[in-house]
Length: 99
Image (cartoon, rainbow, N blue to C red):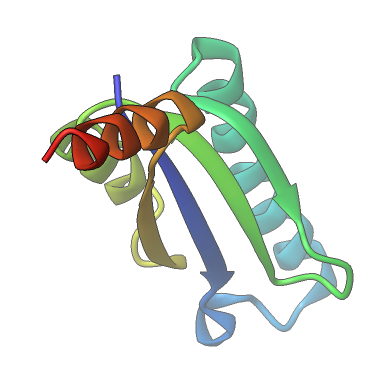
């Protein structure tokens, strides 16, 4: 199964100004993240110091990752990068050495 690094950033134009509404907004998003971690859709998640941006690691197909991230739209913007594992790199190096 493929692994993906997702860099995420909150769309600050969607964050409520009222502190009580903002807590409701944050709670909704964090509960979605907790669900993704619990289900295994996401294997690691964090927010960068300073807030509003962070990362997630997930496994699946491109379609599965896209579907999972679509739940967060329009509140969060994403950049998604496929990850090549150590064993995959070793396989590529082996194949190159035999070419």
